[in-house]
Structures are given as structure tokens and as C-alpha cells.
Image (cartoon, rainbow over all chains, first blue to last red; front, side):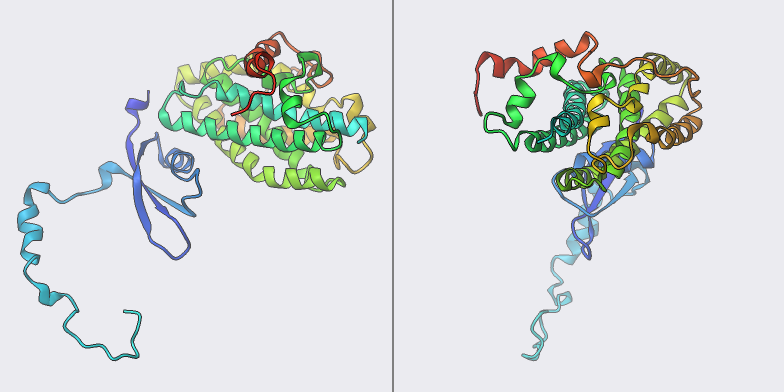
Length: 94
Length: 249
């Protein structure tokens, strides 16, 4: 039976103010069940305060075969990092 | 401690210990990994609640502990409802048993939060949130199964036929309940039936299940007269402590 249930991706926010992070996936018949299952599977050790679930089939991913084209060109463009500015000493937490 | 209070604490603790044990029998056998974990979580909640009631019950005697209460009593000394000792059966039986009990327990704890006994009030207040989730979870499943396929609906009807007869006992006060000092159980059990029935009707209506007209006629668990199943539950649960008294890990 579980084989017929679609796969869902689970995102948990660990604290108020932080981002939801992908924690894993699970099977469920619908969104309500997916949230309950996520609560039971992924938050039983106080991992979070909020749950998002997304049907895995609804996520569109980049093609791993195109990694070269997509990501490597950024490798030699260090000037895109904001490390060439001298910050005034008053600005501390950047 | 008043004998009536002691017995009432056993009643509260035995319900959750035995149902927790029954649910734990699904561990490793759930219909899906997610449900296996869900039911195990509920088991742990229920066994945790039993521990709190037993610790309180044992607190005034030197020779007793939560462990002696759980492991060294025989079936006739258990005060749990007959419903919770019934076998797991199929998934329909297990989730209907959980729903029938959680819907009652939810109201029970809601009132016990206002108990004049501060320890009972504190335990019930803590456990109330757990039970609210058990109720939500089991309600969803009753609806899903009742309103699912022809087969799941049929399985729910069979479970209903097997389990409904044990629900009347919730509202039949045992002698120790009647003897409790006023305020410990703020709303006497018989007065809870209407609230419970509202919830049953709401969920059964969404699930397309009939509310049985017959009264739940089976009783006795609250005073120690159990079905044949409890003995087997205890045999498994208590074996280790009986064979190796005081063993620890």
C-alpha cells in the first residue's frame, strides 16, 4: 500500500526566525497525512517549530549533467565576492 | 492516600499503560514506516503518562514504585477499560480503538486539568496536548478509512462492530470514582458521555460510518474483571521482572 503513496519532501524550521531546511522525504497519501507523518518522523526530538511539505514531483531540479555549464564558470570570478571592500571598523557583524 | 484516589490513579495509569503496550506491538510491523513511527510515538506518550500516575500512586508508600505497580500486579488488580486491552486486529481495529479512547481521554483530561488535586491537574495538563494530537491523528485515520475504498470502509464497520460494545464502560463510574472527594474529578464520568458522543458523531459523519444504536454493554475492566486478553498482555509485559526480579538496564 505504501508503495502507491506519493513521495513528499519535508522542510523543517528549527527555530522562529530561521529558514526551513530540507530534512528528508516520506510517503503519504495527501498533504494532511504528509504533515502528520513529518511531525512523527522528523520532529520527535524537538527538531522544529514549523513544517513544510512539498510533493517531490512538484520540485524541478537542475540537471546534474549540466553542472559544468551551470556552476563552474563562477569558480574564477572571485571579484563577485564582497571581499575587496575595506569596511569601516564601526561595521562589525558582516 | 485515600484508597479511592489510589484506585483512581491506577485506573488512569492502567488505561494508558495497556493501550501503550498494545500499540507498541505494532513496532516494526506498521503498514508503512511513517505509521510505524507514528504509532510508536503514541505508545511512548501513553506509557509516559502511565509512569506519572504510577509515580504519584506509589509516592506515599515505601515498598511501592512505578515498576512494582506496572510489573507485579495480576490481571484482576488492573483497573483499565476493557477497550484498551482488546487485540490490535487489523489497522482499522487499531485506529478505531485509539480514536474511541482518545476522544474520551481528551474530554477526561480537559476536566482533570481543573482537578482539586494539584498533581492530577498537572499531569493531565501536560498530557492533554499529547492526547489532542492522538485524537487528531486517529480522527484523520477513521475518516480516511471510513471514507476510503469499499474494503477500508468494510474493515471499519467490522472494527466498529467488535469494539463499540466496550465504550459504555467509559461512563459507568466504578465505586472508587463515586467515593472520590468532590473536585478531584470535576465532571463525573456519566456527564461526559454527551460531549464524547458529539465528537463521535462529527467524525463518523465525515467518515460515512453509522453511529451504532446499541449501547456499549460490556463492562468490568474498571473493577478488575477483564477479558481473556489482558492476561496475555501482562504475561509478555511482565515476564522479565517476574523471571529476574529487580533486574535493571
